Image (cartoon, rainbow, N blue to C red):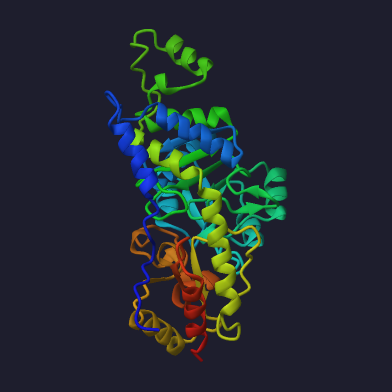
Length: 392
């Protein structure tokens, strides 16, 4: 097969999505800033996911930030247990809000934090466990849920790359205090830019809602919350009471319209991605590549490729194959690999050495992802897997 163009991701916005957006823009005096279309999408997303409420924001990174800021308001500062393999905004949100990140190694089968290593890292200062569901895989275990419930430690879920993946038949994002989603370009569902914070805790999500909009009390949906602040501060205009030193992280009606349009086909997109991954892994040579990923209930975001052994020569041959065939790739899986190797952490004190997370470090040096999207042809998927399998 000749050299092909295989981009890392494809734009998921369809002609139908654009037509719905244009139709709205052509209506009389269309509102563009945050409004009823965003609320409609929040409600539809909550129903699809299986939570009581959702708050849409302008990005997945903003969802991370607001979740950690709300956690600080509710529980105070301390330590947050985080994976070494994740996206930078997860760790950045921990730092922005004043928490101390405690890094834990991954389970190579799920690419998420190893539950036993989480338990080893818990101390009296632990305020939450912030897991990342990497590239469509489920990082939750029943043991983790049972132990956190026993210890009364909140669980936060980053589901930004894993829309619709499941654990025991329930969608990821419903198991903890709160969950975060991203609707960035080429995710399972995209609103151009956008994100969501989801929870069954109305008090927690009310804090998020106020934090999203400058900390304004008028954004609260809880009457008791509003009346509390109004009674405490009678000298203030009730429309301009700022409960928190917060941000403006609101989305737009354009984001809401696109989200509503795409939600109708999200389940189909997930099923295609899941089937593509199964086909890809079945064709890979298991002697060269690690193929025992925990695929049950996955919603694959990108094909995961990892060498079994730490072999630099093999690694170079894999990357030469990608480049010579026009296949875009990222080494290190999610977020640039082992976060302990990233410069933004170098100025912090008491950050462990990267080698203390051996599985994360192996992925950093000998793992990749390649684009998976619903328009991929089966023959291309098989072709790539077999080509990679020729490497010895």
